[in-house]
Image 1 (cartoon, rainbow, N blue to C red):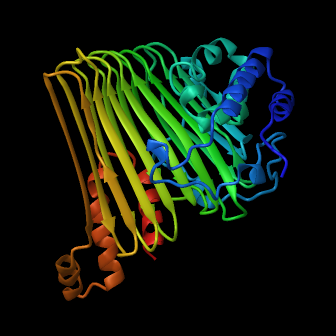
Image 2: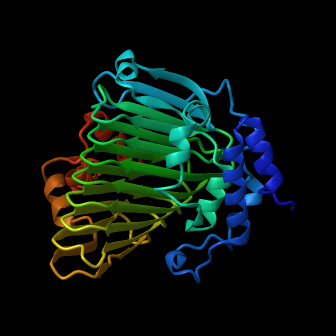
Amino acid sequence: MMTAFTQDSVKKLSATLNEPEWMLAFRLKAFEIYENTPMPTTSNEAWRRTNIRRFKPDEIGPSINGDAATSWEIPDFLGKELTGEEVGGSLLQIDGVTRQYELSDALKEQGVIFCDMHTAVSNHPELVQKYFMTEGVQVTEGKFAAMHGAFWRGGTFLYVPKNVKAAAPLHSVLWSVNGKTFTHTLVVLDEGSEAIFMDEYASGEEAAGLHNGAIELLVGDNANLIYAGLQDFGQNMWQFNHERGRVGRDGKLDWVTSMMGTRLTKAFQTLELDRPGAWGRMSGIFFTNGRQHLDLDTQQNHNAGNTVSDLLYKGALREQSRTVWQGMIKALPGSQKIDGFQANRNLMLDKTARADSIPGLEIEADDVACTHASAIGQLDPDELFYLMSRGIPRKTAVEMSVQGFFDPLMRRIPFEGVRNRIFDRIVEKIG
């Protein structure tokens, strides 16, 4: 089979998008790294529990000309507002091509920039050149990070100027039809600014597809970002993601991840607390069924003293599905008086499912408070019996128990619409 990911493909993609010379140069450099980086195997420590030998990228290929389905009807639920209040900006992309876009006058007057990534490259080159894969995700992080740098297409750019508190939440939706998505999310909050951003990804159940994404969340000094990433791809999709949040002095990042879909997901999610007073919270919700395989690799890096990180990931598993969570809290020498916490809890709804939970600490400072915990368990039969003895049908009793399991995480999500969206999908998956 001919190779689909070629240097010529990179040039065609850039030409189709009418990109400036500097972005083409960036892509070509990333492609060189991609070509010289081997595909990961189970002999790589980070990939030891995730075998991708069945993944055939050249059978899928990159998205060169953006042939999105123009007449495709997206599901009604994707169009619904999640925040319970007026949205400040909304962006709908199909296969990385913008189909709908709105930005309120209030946000425009505040100087907030919210647009698709290609518009940002054309209209805000000084910001994109400064922040695109420079401080967050790096093209040198592995085969799929380099692939993304060379072949990225679509995605969202959000910039909030200094001391601006964005007047209303922002909402981005990607719907994939052709199964080739390489979207890039870049959020930059300047000093003292605030924003709330919902980022959704979904697809149908068509032929095998690939999502090779990157998410960069750059939170300046005294800035405050609430970011929710909701992934609900069909179980035909292979997903390889690199995600990184950076937080400056006295900044806050509240980072929520929900993963319900894909055939296989491998995601690297890294929190960098760079200056004293930085605070970061990572909340993860996942539910797998069938033969889904989900591997989340999280890192909480305390790069300065007096920083706080708090991670809680919870998952429920059915049938033959498998999840892997590998977590690490790292404190550099001199990063004193830090507080780092991580916990992963898994609920097994079938004995045929499997969860691997691997917490870790790498502490090079001596005045710290760092703890981790992990647990794997089944539904409490006494709890189910109690509910059923009160006349509640077994299916409803299971749903109530699972809802109770996820409740501590749901409480972290500030919007009822998001909580309802996630729980509706959980109920569907319980079956």
